[in-house]
Image 1 (cartoon, rainbow over the protein chains, first blue to last red):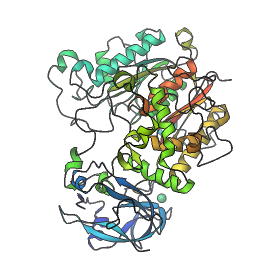
Image 2: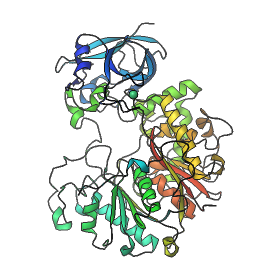
Image 3: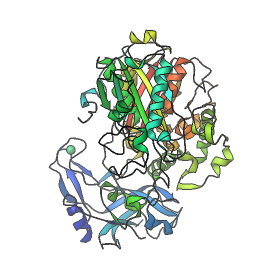
Image 4: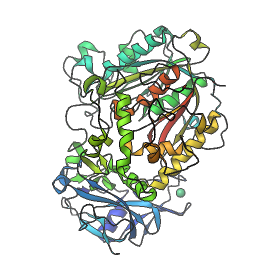
Length: 136
Length: 441
Ligand SMILES: [Zn+2]
């Protein structure tokens, strides 16, 4: 699918650079021992700003799904209807990422299945972004 | 001078705070509602600003007071969740013939503005307290409740208007039409979810956990439209007075399955003003005073790209406990619930957090409740206002109706006595809510 290319900023460059190296790196709050995504300037729980970037396993579980029939994003409209699933990361299931689950037919999303991260190149700039594939 | 928002210390966002210090010190009296429209026709006299002025004048008249008595305004400046003009784009031709202008050219067009209102409402000459309640009118209500209880204003307008410009609300607009993505939307937005999809995702998780399904929403959605069609001020009554059926709902086109077109509220233009005051000052107001017994706030924990069912349940449970603690009542005391419904698929998270009409169940019972009598005539009136779904997107019909129910003059008046009610918005993990009561006893 022709995703929009996210434009990195100085602040979230470590996440996007890692994506281009096909590594999943997200923020971690040492005080709370808690991961978070998307990147933020501080930990929403304790307010700490000394967040670190840490590579995670890239494994997760499909938590839920919708089938999009009416997307606001122009570039994705030709692909409707399409799946969007929530992926709960293995390290911390409250950290949720989104996925189109490439290759999984609409209405056939296996809730609870294990997934692993892959990286998809977005056409406008070549920036890679995390995607997920079912492994079991 | 920039208009402030409530200091953080005004928030009631944790348990253990005890009975609210303002309980018994604040009441609502007059209510004023503008006409509704599907979209703005670009005439000054039908603008967001014009509708807001009309709503304020109606609220003052409804309370039977003089505009001189108004000494405070709390307003929600955001007037859409969809498309706005560029903040610096000039007002349309003819605008300055009708309205005086402030520095901000979109004031009264795509943004509410207290100074613009005061400039164009010379009768409001004694306003000394001005505060914004950002994002949601629920925030304006809880801010005004604190302001009156703290003696910062005696007779305070609470105000929110909505604009809706031509074109589709989100689809292919602005950032969504580009081939790159910037700003916070880039982390999740590039997956192309419409606004209702986060709610649909968590609703799906809820159904999987508790063995429910989307069809079970039909009685709620139909009942809300019925309630909305009793309201002469609602959009559907004024412009599309047609009832919907269970079959309509079950065959509605999908937006983000399991959310269909009927699970999405319809953007409109409309404005509401409500008068908050003290019980003492309310003695000469024409309308029965409705006490604010407590208010509370929840805010997102923001750990993932979207929230989880677990977060929505934790957060709405906490809201229920905080509200009851500060009001000194329990779920069994509620005569009705008017929690937010735009989107319909999250209403049950609010209902369950409040344990409304629970028979001992904690979670997973609301869709079963929807299969019972939830009408205004029944024992457990669910969303008697009809909400956004029955009246159009405003995020305030439910607050307005809570006041009118307790005053005994709601167009969809519940049959059982309306002693205590609750209303709040918007998301289950991002909510300002209030308990309303006929008395403080
Ligand atoms: Zn922390």
